[in-house]
Amino acid sequence: MDARLTSEQRQLRDAAAKLADDLGLGSVNDMADERRIARLEQTVASTGWRALRSDGASGVEVAIVAEEFGRGLVDVPFLGPVLADDLWGPAESTPPWTVVADGRAIDARGARRALLVQGESILSSAVAPAAIGADQTRAEAALIGVPELLGELSTAQAVQWRALALVATCADLVGTARGAHALATDYAKVRAQYGKSIGSYQAVAHLLAEGLALIEGSVSVLRHAAWAVDELSPERAVQAAVIAKLYCARAALTVCETAVQVHGGIGNTWECLAHLYLRRALTSTELFPTSLEEIDRGLS
Image (tube, rainbow, N blue to C red; front, side, top):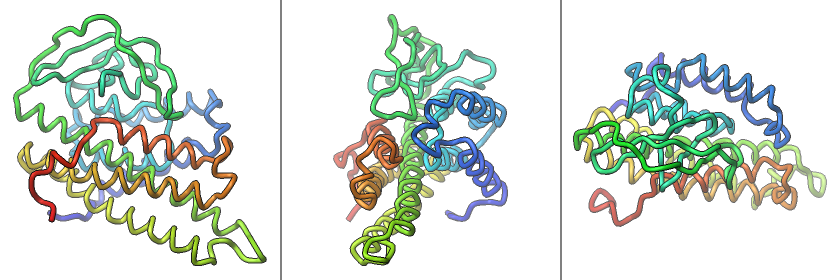
């Protein structure tokens, strides 16, 4: 495996990062800015990134966009539509789809139907209007009625799709951790106590250094799992994705909690972005949950 990104993948990363920086959340008040949300939705739709898999993109490319969107707290659907696209064709040719995880339609803003994988069957269900839950940046929706059979997958396709779903949530977790860490680091540079920035004190500096080490480890396991989606057998790809999900979820939680801690009292206020990162990390952890029991080898 070559862990380096190709020139095209670097360009994709830079474009996704610029979009997230320009139109993602810069403050909590931005969540109520409907003009920004409309521009963000229009821009993401114009990129075609929700149909990456239909365009022949690899799991690495899906992870690149998901990571940058998590870092920038992009609050329009991506994760749900891109996973639906992998199941059921180009998003442009179908109603706005998302997918079901743990009995609810995720990333469901604007979605009319949701795809559900049961065994090797693809089911389709109408969805109720989306509502914001614990994660303030992504909406969820309840299913309406009895799901209808839409098609069948081979065993290998179903397993590979699960690997992609795990990788996409891992990428979101890594991006979320990177965003929270950057937020805390920037604050530590400007917040002064006793005449010095708080980042100059070891108690804070060590917390941020440990967070950076966790992020670097997360990037490594994510890159391998994303590569494995298309390059290894579905069973081995899922194994890599499960390991990555377990590592990245714990790392992201630690980094996001550290970001709140570095901010001190203000970190517990609604106005501070740190809680949005923590909420997003906790929600992504619960999507397509994994457990240590699923890993039967590969760890020592």
